[in-house]
Image (cartoon, rainbow, N blue to C red):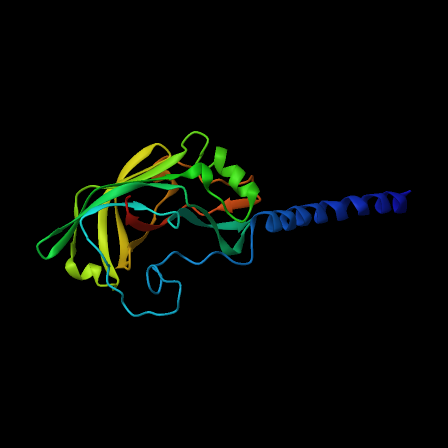
Length: 241
């Protein structure tokens, strides 16, 4: 009888060991991928998909209103963990559903950007995993309740005239960022490159989930998300028709 009891317990013990391993493996393949999209940045030559890196000045009249083209992107980047194991890549979700405008005017030796505001439709965020996207509807960003995010500079931004030369200009943009229904003053570092018929503006900002009343979208004790996500944006601005 003793041997029989031991033999019956053995499959139970094996199952107790294998089931958690199987769950971790399933979670890994469900949520984690071997690589992530590159961080957003200005192109080698704005408006040109070629490999040339020679600066190309902005052409045409400067004064006017600019709006984001369909090439504009807003999204998030955050590191996930499987149990206590560090994932090999970031979770990245992005949307091109970006609207807004900015007024641009030459004033002496400066270029002034004013009355700017840009909104991203977060319900259109897509990552490489649809299950993660579905989680964002009710967890973390809770896009079912808070479908959009907005950034509006707090004051006009003055740029040197060289900002139109095709070289990269780095600026600090103070403004109001609204995510998850919470508006906070932030200062977003940005890179700007104007050439051809468009202007690229790239920025990113890392902050705690708690700053905007959010909780990390963890999945029980299997998948945990680090507490500091990064907002990424790339605005490709063109003259409004």
